[in-house]
Length: 242
Image 1: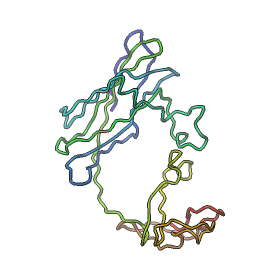
Image 2: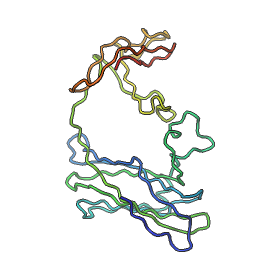
Image 3: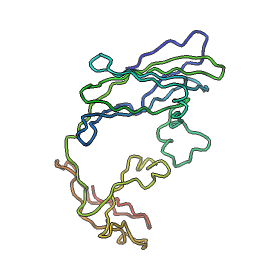
Image 4: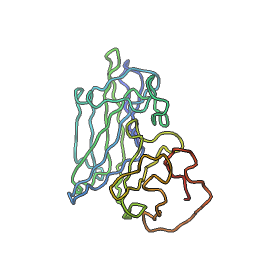
């Protein structure tokens, strides 16, 4: 739900706010703390190319239509967390994951919240005031539903023995490219918790040939066994049967 606020007369170019991701979930914190957390990014989207800077941000957290908490970010605070995460810049690498999801944003910033589960927060309203290069100000607001996520199934590592989850490209933004934009690596480890030795062959990987397990109870709806395993020389990812 979007709350549109009129641009102040004679002031800066039109813009709106967009939440990333589109659906925001809160989750219970581990350790029986009786608290829940959620996070999201607010992107300031321009209708045309414009230079905008944040002045302030206010957030109202509600439960059942009743405000239970208010927070405010000043210009100095926003300057520390302001980013440009979803726009292609001259120095954006060709392999960057940013190129898979671009927005005509002026800037964005991430907000994180943690509060008692008893508050039952189910929505947030974010109001952002910006200023353009000529010093003119404007404000927009955005209503954000907060959905409650609870894991229904306990998951296990989908192989026997030692293993680790990871993203091999984490140093440059995580997995990118249309073929593995959402990939997570599952690597088998040897008895010394090593991933693989120096030999550049499939059998050298500690996880090669390991039995694959179902990570949770369920029903197999489709299976195939005609996809070649790791056909590219020197490439240690397994593209095996599904």
